[in-house]
Image 1 (cartoon, one colour):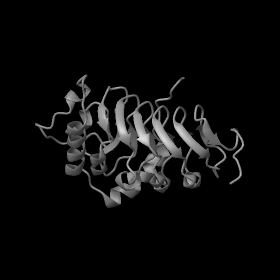
Image 2 (tube, rainbow, N blue to C red):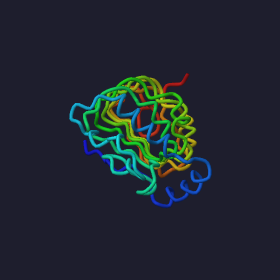
Image 3 (cartoon, rainbow, N blue to C red):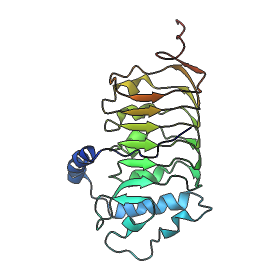
Image 4 (cartoon, rainbow, N blue to C red):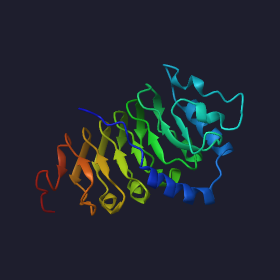
Length: 218
């Protein structure tokens, strides 16, 4: 399967969010704490995060860390985290909620496990792109993802997710890509109101609905 690694939103969406976030959050110390907590919570056998050195704090120093993209290179405020294919092991790093301006999160192709936090929309209220594909996440797709009103990309392929896909996800007006192939999901798929959503439900034998098998009557 060919996997797309480009998950982050168009410049227009980022600019729009910048105007909102600039008024309500300041980052800096909380973003530094966020990254330090993430590094401490994950096993990094290949030392990809070795560049995350917090001993010499300077203006914008975290912006030089591998996988970290800042809103501005001289400002310790994280815009995107791209930590794909780093053989990282552990649970979803809940301390990521301290990266208060984060819009893009790519943890794909690692060895992360456990559940996707139910309060993910509270942790990451400005999320536009989420890629957790090719890990070992289990449990259900959080209902609160439907509260990530800015999100345009959700990639949860190749995990161990089960249960039903929340129907409320169909109300996400900005959603462009929703892929959940190779899981153990069941039940009807969402009826997206946005007809231009690119979806991939393959290899979930229990799913039904448009373009899939007919859903049985209750």
